[in-house]
Image 1 (cartoon, rainbow, N blue to C red):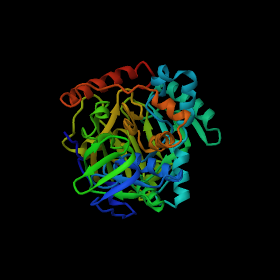
Image 2: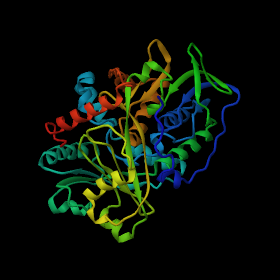
Image 3: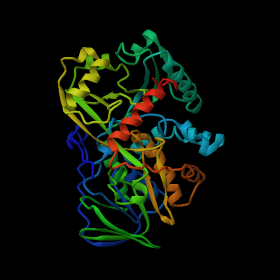
Image 4: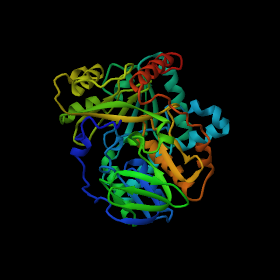
Length: 434
């Protein structure tokens, strides 16, 4: 069953700066590449291909660009490519793991380069805090700090404990943290729309309100909508949590959970600087994280997901507000202007999936960011575009990681997600995440 948004109007749609408006597909078109999905995955991969000279591209979006997770996320620009790269070590070996560590740090640079190259107005701002609550998490964060410094020696990266934590975030909830000024935050929807505008500048075509109803595979693939079709040499499935069974082979490799977020009313400048002296973005390192950031309009965006049981809170604003007040109790009188939520797509190992369908080398897919999509999508789609064009060792490495099937995901989704969250929370005590 299709999993809808809980509230399509959120901070991002309310403050978007690009009003592009693409029509629906009402003709039959030939293309080199057809992409199904108009979020970060579809648009980023298309733009990477266009920059390589492959410009005869058609993007089909069932609703509007950024309808899914791209248009309702935290906007966090952070290091990393998955929840825990060590989870895939047995599949890639020590050398492969080293490659993944190196490419995991590329995302922020790709985003900043895009913003500069195409003049995208996306409110990018430096400053990220990785936060820890206790001594166990201090050990984990200090190891992260050493790895961050080794991979990104040119960025300002500091490890702080005790009272020094207040120099990066105005909360008594934390014991330690990493201040990473190479990361930051961005208006995700404006970034996507700016990238889509850049894509059309190469001659690519985008169609909104054009849900796919049928696909015929072969040497040339035909993708049909209600009023038109695209025949292309290559296909990319980039639907993530909104695949909705369209391609069963990959639909069974992920499962959806829900995340929720609020936006406060605009706050006074002195209160914003108390919350965030670096005007940055933050997340803790628990198996189910709180994540938050301040915006250019002086709002606080605060998000999370249910930590153990999988359910949708009856009052999204009240539920997220309670979490926010655990971190910032002095915001008890602040008004909540917007609350929203929706599904996000998880893989079994919490690592993004790319590859081709079985026995269909011209049918590609990308999915399963597991809640960390803004920055990793820019990394993963660069690697995917290499695989779709000239091929690369990085693409071969990422596609060598097995994508496990999730059995019973439709009938048993709430129970399965509750069990998975409980397991991850318990294991967090033993791996320094709780």
